Image 1 (tube, helix red, strand yellow):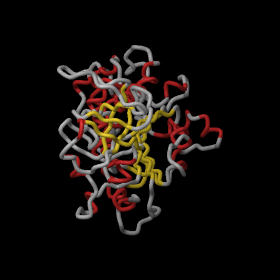
Image 2 (image 1 turned 90 degrees about the vertical axis):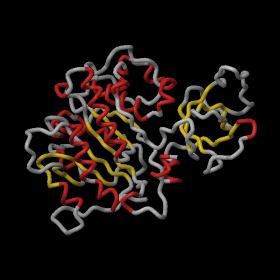
Image 3 (image 1 turned 180 degrees about the horizontal axis):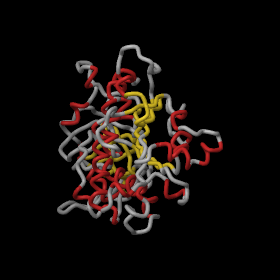
Image 4 (image 1 turned 90 degrees about the horizontal axis):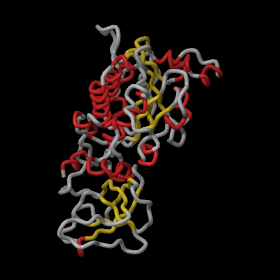
Length: 357
């Protein structure tokens, strides 16, 4: 299986080893001047998703750097079908670009064979054919075998041409995984729910009695923590910059935070193993990298009521490190989608050396 090459193994070098720490990319998408048409907005989201996949980012946070004027529900995670159905049937690229970006990122992270079940038809996806393939390890083909697999629960087993209708055994739930084999978990899970399943055998069984397999429903982090697979990213939305920190889903929060600005120290200072004026990088489990918009993170701090109440005036005070991703840049501005590639590449060595495995 192709994705097996990305699995952690004792014979692999450190550079190729999957890091089980949790890098998080945080950015805002409010300024529509960078992408004025649906075509450009869709392509921009695809470029960002490609960067997240290439650098094995585990969590993405899209935050609003302006005054909090929208309903809190708008900024909820958009990975579930129920939440998407509550949104009105209109294109969100202009009215709420933050939601649009999170919507597209969630769509691309989902295995292609599950998208039709988890994402109803929506105008945000009218140009989905222009989006790039992420081809992540959990985007498995029908003929691929992996001990872990993503699926969606079904009330009944779908009828296929030329086959009789199969019934779900009592006390079990049928999971559509894309395999020709019928997969069940010994628990009741609500229909149309995305679930990560784990099979008993690491290698593909030579014989499958009755063409049925019993699997175990596990947490989405299990493939990475147990077997070293990169298993995609989660998408979170935040109404302001402070919510990025206070609503962290990890126990203990982010233990290493990096803010980006043209006024920061060169990113090479952090990646260097030599002693420098920069603070030393500790070993970390959850690293957060924050990218601002065209006007920088200063605008987000000024618009954040929570930070204003705490007397925070400079975004530099919020982070462990304040870095410049491209010293001596030839353009007045660096676009967010460009900064993400620069930042994740510039900090790649830090992740490999200091990320806990």
